[in-house]
Image (cartoon, rainbow, N blue to C red; front, side, top):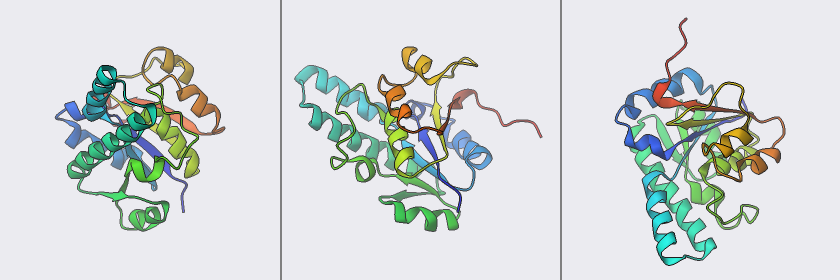
Length: 194
């Protein structure tokens, strides 16, 4: 069986009506035989950030609620992708792939409180959590699907400085040598000509 290809679906893409058309086409074209989708927190995480700024939630509480926000986004993405299936544990991946389905991670099940190596901070977003997930499933590739792109030749540390990924992303990536990482502006994506 192929090693997983972790695909982080940026929450900002939920504000884009064309997502329901473009995301399935991108997955069919570029995901490969063993995709594993991780949703970002999107508007749910943004609302939580605002509440945290207002009330100063304990960091562990904010982290737990941010994972719940990713679960909500995952439920929305699941509804938008008929070929997707929600997965709560690694044993569900192979059966999903055999059925031709796109497994969609329930974030709190895979990245919850029992995983104490993830800093509970807004410096860590779903981008870094995608790296942690890639490490845990021994993924070969990680693709971050975003609403913005990067300049050719830039490195993940540059992405962090530019605000395209979170501050912890370069540190998370350093823990997974050999992981192939790409950032794709899905809003501008076009399949390559044959």
